[in-house]
Image (tube, rainbow, N blue to C red; front, side, top):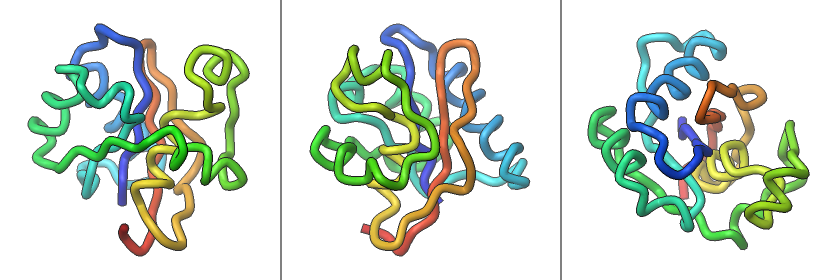
Length: 126
C-alpha cells in the first residue's frame, strides 16, 4: 500500500503525517503504515516530505509528471486548481496509483487536511 501525498511548499512533516494517518483511518487501517510515501517529482525535494518518510520509516517515491498523467483515468477526484497550478489534475491520488505499480487501485478518494492531501493505493508493485 502506497500513500500518495500532495502539499503546499513549506508544509511541515507533521502535517504530511497527519494527512497520511487520516487517510489510513478513513480506509479502516488506523495504526498501520504504508509501504512507501509518494509525491510528484517536483515536490520530492521538499524537506518535510523527506522527513515525513523518515519518521514513518518508509521509502520515498518521486513520481514524474508523465507517470502522474498516465493514471488519470483511475482518479476519483480531480482539481482544476491543481491542474492549473502544476499541470496535472491530481497529485496525491495519481502519485499513489503510479507508485503502487501494476493493477493499482485507490483504497478511496483522497483525504484533505488543512495543508496536505493523502490517498492510498494498492497494487502489484513497480
